[in-house]
Length: 401
Image (cartoon, rainbow, N blue to C red; front, side, top):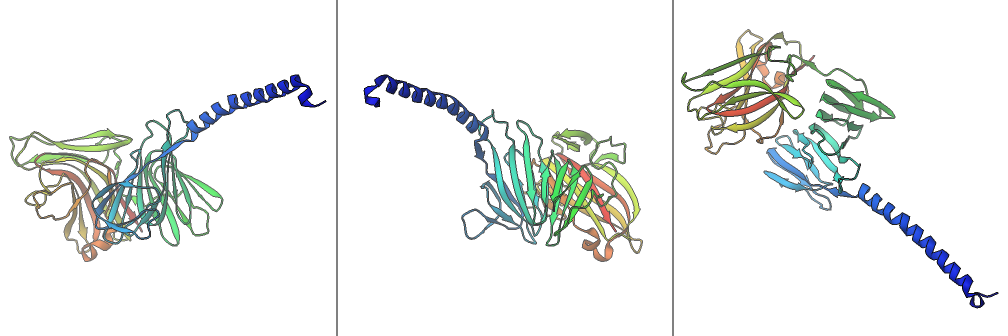
C-alpha cells in the first residue's frame, strides 16, 4: 500500500520525525549552551617592562623581533621575550602573577586565558616555555577562580601548584627548579617529583628529575619573616634632627607574604635611617658561590633617586665583611623607582613601583674579585632618606661550596 493511499500513516511518520527532532533539540540546545558556558575562554594580553637595557620582543606572525625599552601592556599569546647580557624584563599577567627575566634569558608566552563566564568551573590558565636562562615566577593567590600554571623547558614539564615564589634556570644541559615558597610538580622521562618550600630539583637532558634536593645553603635566619624580628634580627632607627620623627619597622602581611615594612612619613626634611641588622659571622673563604637574593617593594620615596649624596634610597642592603687580608670592607646595593632631579646614581638600581621585585646579586665571590669576602660579618637592610615607605621579604644569602 503506497503512502499516498494511506495519509494517516504519513501523518504518523511526520509526527514521529517531528517528535524525535523536538527531543533532539530539547536536549542538544541546553547541552550545547552548557558546553559553551563551561569551555568558552577569553585570551588576555600581558604587561611587559624593560627593567634594564633593551629587550627583544617577537610577536606571533611577525618574522623579526623588535627592540623594546620602557613598558608595554599588550603583549599577546605566542610572543617570545628575550634579554641579553645587559637587559632584564618584568612580566605581569592578567591575574597578577609575575615573571622576571634575568640576563641572557628567553621565555615564550604560550597561553594566558580565563573562562569567559563566571559559571565555568575551568581554571585560569597560564602556560610558558623557558628556553634558556633564568626566570623567577611569582604566582599570585587565586582570588576568584583556580589557576593552572604550567612551565616547560627543553628538559622538563613543571606545574606550579599554589601561590608562591619559584626560580627556574635552563641551560643546554639541564633545567633546575627551586621552590622558595609554594609547591610544584616536576615531570621528566615518565617520573614525577613533588617539591615543597625550600626544595629544588635538577633535570639533565634525557634523565629523570633528581630530588627533592636541598637548595644552596642559606646563611640568613628568618629571612621570610615568618617569625618575629627577635629571631635573628635587630631593628634600629636614627635621624639627623632629633626633633623629627623616628622611622618605624614592623612585620606586615602582603598577600601570601610576610614582609618587613620600613616607614617614615610626615614631611621630614632631614635624613633618617630605619633598618634591621643580622649578625652572620661566617667564614666563607671555602665557598665558591655567595649570592644575595631578596624581594623588594617600593611604595613611596620623597627624595629623587638616592638624594643629593646618592646614598639615601628607600631600600638599601649592605653586607659587611673582612677580606682575605683581614681588612674590613662592605658591599651595598640601593633601590629606587624614580629620579626626576637626575641626581648621580651610585650603587642604586631603578625598579618598578608598587610591585614585588626579585633581586639577585650574582656571585659576589666573582663580582668582588680581589676584595671578595673571607669572613661575612653582618647584613643590614634599611631605608634612608626623608620620607619613605617600602617592604622587603624572602631575604636569602645563598652559599655553595
